Amino acid sequence: MGENTKQHLYDAYTGESKAAVRLKAFAKKAEEEDYPAIAKLFRAVSESESIHAYNNLRLLREIKDTETNLEEALASEQKIAQVSYDSFIADAEAEGDKAAATMFAYARDVEERHIKLYEGALQHLVAEKIPNYYVCGVCGYVADDVVPEKCPICGAPEDKFFEVK
Image (cartoon, rainbow, N blue to C red; front, side, top):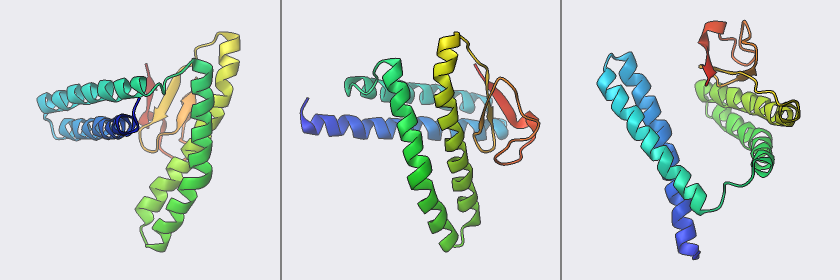
């Protein structure tokens, strides 16, 4: 694969991934504003953009065997939790943006939880166990098997969690 094509695939992957998440957010807002048909359209196009992103990753040969994917996901979580978010928080605080600093802190703390989940994934494989996962709709914290009464990161109540199917 040529260098230009490789860079274009990475750029396309980034753009498609951002579009998929943005459209999911738009769908949520449309639902809140009682536009179910528009929300459904946003969700459909979001799924389409996710397929595009997946195809780019596939062509880049970024999707490997599960053990390698798990190791790479763990390394990525460790890097962002330990390096990026602390500087993001410091910058937001220095600029007086408490909301951004709080969101960065939530994300950092949730990334630490992701690390523990990835580390525990091998134990689940050995035990042939498929845990249930619940995600906090406020900060993104992921609980396995039991929904906490209160989110340990942001304090959101139990009813803010949703199950991942």
